[in-house]
Amino acid sequence: MKKSVLVKRMKRGLFLGLTLMLAGVTQAQNLTIFGEIRPRAEYRDGYGLPLTTDDEGGFFVQQRTRLGAMFSNSLLKMQVTLQDARTWGEGAHNADNPSIGVYEAWGEILMLPGLVAKVGRQPLKYDNRKLFSPANWSNTGNAFDIAMVKYNLNDDFLVDVGFSYSNNSAISKETYYDPTMKYRFMELLWLSKKLSKEVTVTAIGVALSKQDTISCLGKSNYKKHEHYNQFTMGGTLKYKPQSFGLELFLEGYYQCGKTVYKGNLDKLKSYYLVANASYQITPMFSLAAGYEYISGDKNPSNGVQKGFIHLFRGNHDFNGSMDYWNSTGNRGLQDFYGGVLFDFNKKKTSLEGNFHIFKTAVQVSNLNGKKLGSEIDFKVKHKSYTWLSFEAGYSVYFVNENVRIIKGIAGKDTRTAQWAYVSMSLKPSVVVSLLSKKG
Image (cartoon, rainbow, N blue to C red; front, side, top):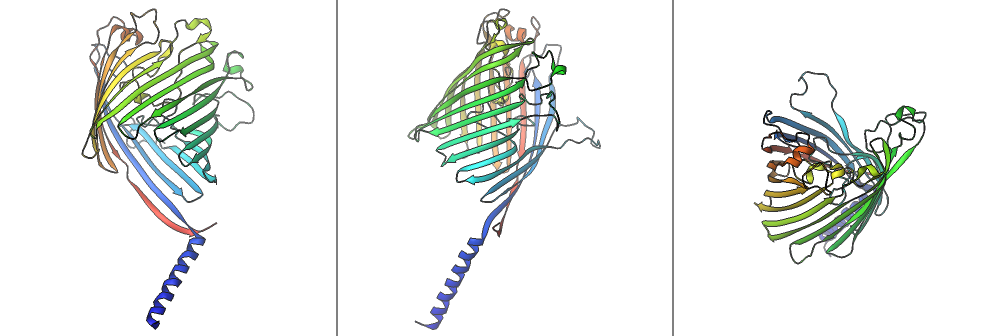
């Protein structure tokens, strides 16, 4: 063998050996820095509430600003996201008012293959976001101070277990918690299983413990852990064939336990049902239709409350974009809806239209029938780059007298209820990769 060939092979072997040796004592670490600036201009002329003909619509601009960083390696992930949410002009430009808060601050540690612990302030999102949602439309979003244990077996079987406890400050003796959240403490269990390539089922159980100030005659007398519990349980079934563009989705939840109604601690028995389907006719065009039933109560004074209590869903994502029925109370709600979606330019641009017909779930004595009018929503989105996108929408609500009665303006002439918005989202990010010694 020629000497030059031997030398080349020795160099290659030496290089390969050094590479393998370094791989044994180093590990990849990534630092991702990201930001978001999202201004949104809105014109509200009957958004959430019909305006009388004596009133005029209002215009404003909201802006959400976020700046965050995430560190990750093979054993650890840690993320902190700062947030400022404001309406343009609500404070003087030179005002010394602290406004930046922490939206996310969590750490995730790998305990065993597929098993992690995630602790700290974090958004939660499950299934179709009916119970938990980051509520991205909101200028502030949703996040929870919670400890989670999460198990993921190849995305085939997933389990989340969570616990959260709320207090206003560090305390040395039991005091009343002025509820910023909807609970004093919360337990969460979520499971997801793929039965086949086409069928996925999930199940969820949520227990919220709240302070019982009824039995102690008010929060000023609250001295110890007197709680009542609300339980929400249910699940979803998703069917999506591989051979054609059909998707079927069923969802249902049941609530029990206790709730407060007019100063009394009543039993709670309510439910929430959803069924929808979508069909992709062509790569550019799809149709969708669905029905939601949120239970109501014909006789709320009998000691049993049957109106479903929403937990932490993103209200704007459901029951129409004009947010008339975020809280349905004892009336409940029926929502019959359908929609069309056009995708253009390799799905960088989309046009969506939806139509809703609303009714109460039960007949309410002061209403003329169950009809609550209807709503049409239009939305257009365009993604120029991975970090730049635009969105605009227009909605109109066809109000009837039942809506005016519920909203407290019965018998008055109202303007055409409409709403329009346009927003821009800037979300740049940069990833820095490092190698460091193990340990």
